[in-house]
Image 1 (cartoon, helix red, strand yellow):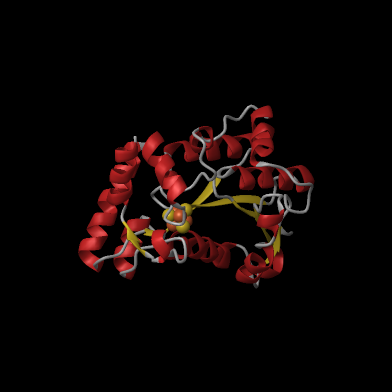
Image 2 (cartoon, protein in one colour):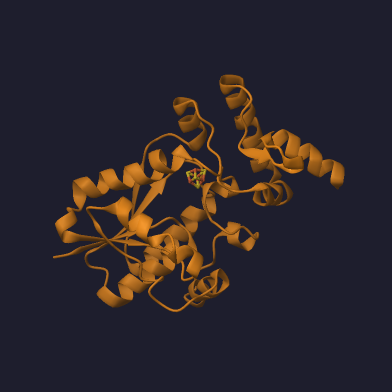
Length: 242
Ligand code: SF4
């Protein structure tokens, strides 16, 4: 019997993907596989548990054991919007290791929560390639276009409160709003809405700078040059504007 493994991130795209798979195939051979990066907002786990409960399932949680900052120290590389080794070590590898042990490729379909818009659909070939030898499906991307707000309305209609980060205006529910792949706009938003999390990231970045030298998550590209822009510098700049 085919196993249906939803690569569940705690985001609304993967949540609605899980709902679609359950509607189409039932939940008997379905797994909600989620990686714990040890950096998630606590409300991600509340939301994920709510979705699992609605489907009558339990989350299958895998973890590397480190958080992104520990990965950067071990790799001697601070992640940024161009390269983020934390994704591989904390999400992709633990999920693939679980699949290798529990879900043989010949009898498993992996479902990925690509959201139904053209920008996300363009990512499908690369994602499918990365998941080989497993077969992948993208149930949301196969359907009509929908905005994130429409997806959130869909989970609200089922009685599930959306994750806090979306309610605070973040585009993604990952790593507590402090994703190293995010741009300056999201970091400024984090500073404005969840300053204690910004402070934590700022302190972690400082520690990594002591280890690695003049590196930063962000870059300042003003004036035709590019240089590291630390979270401390961005914060001071923002505070001077306010
Ligand atoms: S969400 Fe961002 S910070 Fe978290 S593991 Fe993925 S790339 Fe790294």
